[in-house]
Image 1 (cartoon, one colour):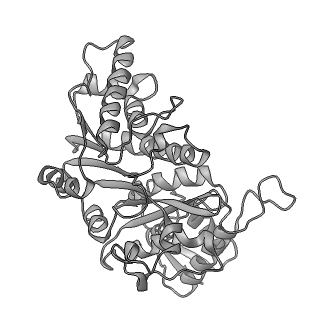
Image 2 (image 1 turned 180 degrees about the vertical axis):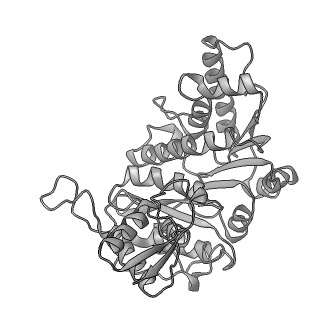
Length: 377
């Protein structure tokens, strides 16, 4: 039986994970809530737990409900006045007693909310569904697959699995091929590294495709992310990013996926707010000078420097010839697009390149950026 993390107080690492879930959903939700062509939003938490820990800290399902209301119920106001999109929650917890407890916690949360609600009806009251299904059966469910494949539906999929066995190649490919679907999943990367040759691991991963650098254990989650990244077809534009969470000598992590640049912009905004040095861990994965140390430089980091060097090389070799190419490339390497704008400004100032077109400093909502071309002098 899986470990029940809800039976005690959440650890610091679990609280960090939940905080990232919260912030990512907070960034994601308004984009789709106000998108004119979206008729429904489906918010799936497929390993939901019981909703609270032993001292009352919120787990992911209650966090999602709380964020869906918004500060001062601003999102409820929008749904009450506009009437769309229809917002549907699907919470799944396979362990029956935890599923029952989750239903009770959701009911109590909704009752407490409605006691102080100024609106005559709740936009979520009939659209919160709690199940107790095996995940592999659920992900193959016809109704779920119809939702995932619908281009008029926005989907946020949270997969906070125990361990690593549930998110296999097939599940990953299904998620990345689902339109208007962003996902986050948790995976115990250290256990894959430690037991990579055992059947318990090779059943789910092709071990010869995962090559760990044993001298760099804290990079094991990045290695797992690269494994999944290599599953993405070469002709498919897709964005993947990871966040490593160290707990003692073990390394776990989150993997984020989006088929749209804006989705990845939102994810990276959250990650860089949690890790201003590299945007990808709680354990100083690039061995930077720490905040507060003598040589700490808030404007630079080893990762930013590494990415800057790669981008400059590609510009000088004419592999990146436009701002659109550069912005997307920086995004794909896990940096916020502003870094590319700073690089171009530097190269212009050094009289190395010039701009063909109108130079702009667009570094957010890059899908709307006006294109210009970069010409070597």
